[in-house]
Length: 268
Image (cartoon, rainbow, N blue to C red; front, top):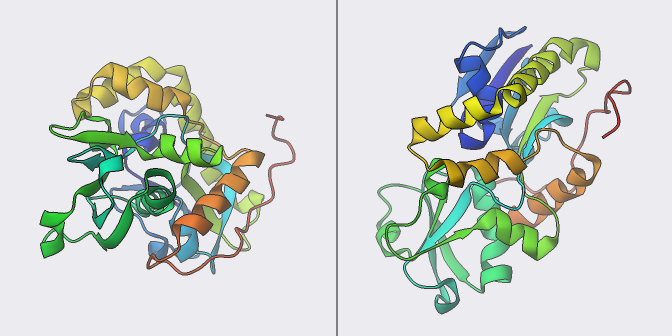
């Protein structure tokens, strides 16, 4: 098995202990800035944006052993030049975002903000990008105060709208692989998570410095997020996928298939 990790701000508890040399991985491991469901083969275990469940649903299942579940604050934001309630409709620009950021935007803009998207722009050279009043950003950029206009946390909007957290990343494992086969990859993820928790202040300071972020803006995001998928998060994941996938280029999805939980794992 080969372990793939999506490299972004909220996955730092998994990627930073590796980069800092705190943990020696027990399996071949690769960190990628871009990671899609279509990149996966039958040999890949991957922590990647939750939207990619739809792209990999034929070959992979979700394992609850590792995830990134946002707290009230998250790292996906909407930027607007005017107050959101003053914008009725227009194109939406997705600026260097993952599929999960797109799903959050699709699931919140109309029902929460009353903004009717007339198109979705992701290309840097698309002429519609210049006229977009709504821009969605992710990661470190989402935690920076907007230079002009207004900023809205879409993870917070989703939580207020639905009462469930935004599941940003999930762990996909090959269909048919059992826990014995997956053991080294799951143990590596657990070791990374434990090291991140034990050295959490050092990790947060390193991430804040690397991205030139105020410590006080980063801490609420990393401190409140969960790094495993709890039972209630399964419903939250399916809800985000069903609401956010509508109109996107991802294939439709009716259910999420899960790997059976570890029977020896402690409750909670």
